[in-house]
Image: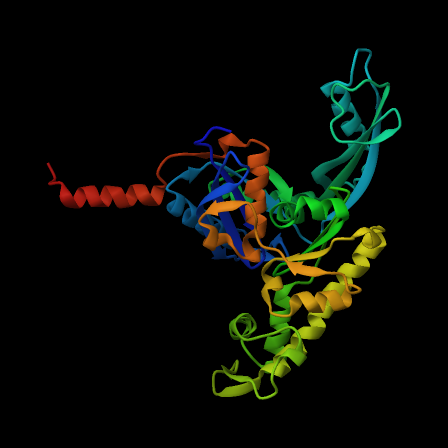
Length: 411
């Protein structure tokens, strides 16, 4: 990529929209120039439920990042998720065309053969695919078959399917916010590119991204994606539990969760408490923080138990030798990692933060930014040089114009 190329990623989540604008570096890192992290609206569990609100929140995130970077982006990699997501591993096969070696056309035919093997009801489509590996004449484990001699080429493909209308609605909202969708990417795959190391991928690792409306799951085995899914329970369910049981507004419960709460009651002193305003606004009440943890713990245990059952059904749970990496806003609650480990058979668990970044590092250091950073990393890896153009963002142009009008006399 040229030195002046820019890439962009947009994570459209249930609770937040995060836009990252960055410049790829020669060492593979990203120099972050703009970050737009704004509350989302019009989404529920990753699904658009109010189109106008969703467009407004996406546009606000994009414009915030553009103002910081002083550019206008024309396209971006956009993440997709939701409970409608499912995945399958399929194989495809083709006979190598007569010639000295495997050609690009042979690879394309093998991949298309695998695509044709994906079961697709009428309302679903392939929204993301990843080649897991190739086999040439029975010799497996080949990552780049081009130029190799052989008669038969097999490919293993990880195909992610989703409801076509749900995915289209997300893409249209991003487009109506002023940015073309250069490529759509399954969010856990994007997140994994930002928080998981190559060594963990090779050993086998589970990624659990606890978002607001859904918990995204991805399992990497032998360096390749082996399983992906989305579970329709997330951090918002924790907040609702607090709101209902403590008689708080959703906003007050979210504030309590983010500022004072822990995931394990035994880590909270019995006399610790916080004064909170009740939902009717008539009085405040001292709420014991141990009680707060006692409300949170079973919901998080449920989330991790659902994740465990989901991965066990896929048949790859026992292969995750490197353990678990947590990400997303729901992973930031203190004690979440040890709680997850207790549910996931004492597997080692760590909280992952974006890696391989420079520039505005402090602005994207938390797990909540991981998906957007991962989308930008994938755009850089794919050489998506046309996703942005270096020119002042509209907000900057307006500010410059007003400044010129103030200092120059009118004719």
